[in-house]
Length: 287
View (cartoon, rainbow, N blue to C red):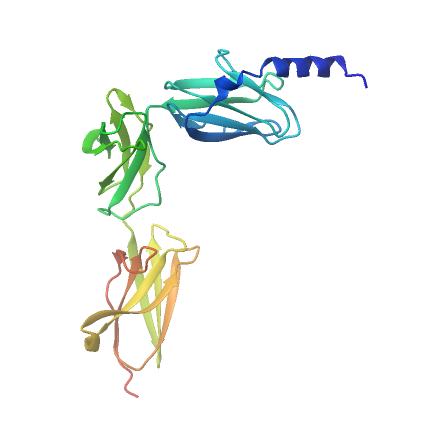
């Protein structure tokens, strides 16, 4: 079987780009990049200094991972993989020599904060965690910016596995970064939403309907209907529901008794309050 000249050149080029095994040894597992039909995904991963980035070829086409400055590179045949350890921080751009429009970038730092989670209520506890390429016991300064520039908000200590964490209580949406010596992490934004719960009540003889709406919207969040029950010495949960996609929910009660109720937006546990509505009242049915 004869090999077309162009294909032969491509295969030779691929073989020439395979580096010795020692150059691809992984010291620490970092992000994984997929070489797809016409793009690298994700196109701009972030790694910690000392970690290895792994490329997998998920397409039917052959590709290469070739640094723009020729500092690293390897071939990716169908189903193949290539890894490279990034020992120093910096921005490392690369491309596929066979398909020049396929480009990517690896951003390497000495300290990283983990991605932010869901929005929280003002003053709630929030655990900031991250990793640092620093000796165990090293000090990490956590800085926050809520509109007036970055200011120190606390310190953490690097553990034996390189991890660190600090609990903060932001009153408003805040951008955080971690600093070790002269190295700063990319920023992470923690969103703080001061939600409000509005309610309306209507009685139809023995049926009481209570409607609620949460702003800003919180689709699928949990709301709990509480009644003031003297026999239970205070507020008592009697119904729970999840907000619909329009951030609304409705409760129906069947009683002739006087109603004193409120709706509480909670965390997923259904207990920890995030916001509470005004108190609603409905008179008892006497006939």
